[in-house]
Image (tube, rainbow, N blue to C red):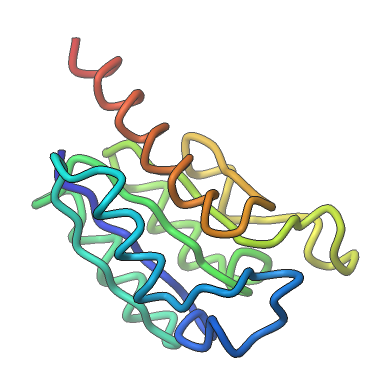
Length: 145
């Protein structure tokens, strides 16, 4: 399976952010863990602090990928344009968050982007990404059969 993994703002700072929320791994280390856990799949990773760049990636994902996993970071709570782009995408989509959103500040309890994905995983640090890939693969298999 060919999967696009999108990461939003400040995720380039993993490893330097609050370990209790985000774990100790850098984004590059998370990418390595994903590749080693799912060697039969092809991944493209993209991180941006810019909303429009993430929208561009989502809009083009249907053309070259069979699944999309996104950690929109703080945009999960604020970005109508990312939500709209996700809604238009026809491939299986999973939103992931490293931290447990329900344990965080009140404004983080609601994600406006997740309802336009097939579902979301939150609170398992880097394991959220592994669960997200697993779920994407299962969704793809179910939809392809």
